[in-house]
Length: 71
Figure 1 (cartoon, rainbow, N blue to C red):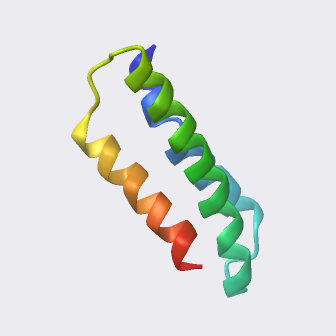
Figure 2 (figure 1 turned 90 degrees about the horizontal axis):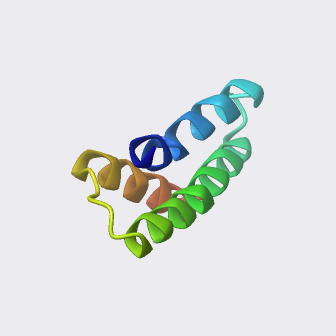
C-alpha cells in the first residue's frame, strides 16, 4: 500500500495533462500544482509512518515540486 501512495502524484499529473490543452503554456501550471500538493501530503504521511521511501519516486516528486515553482 505504501508503494501505491508514494507513486500517486505521477498518475495525477498524467491524468491532468490529458485533460488540458498542451498548447497553452499557462495550462501546465495546474497539473504541476495538483501533483505537487499530493506529493507533499503523501511524503509527509509516509515519513510520519516511518516507511522506506523509494529514491526514484522522491526524485519524481521533487521534479513535480520544482515544476510548480517554475511556472
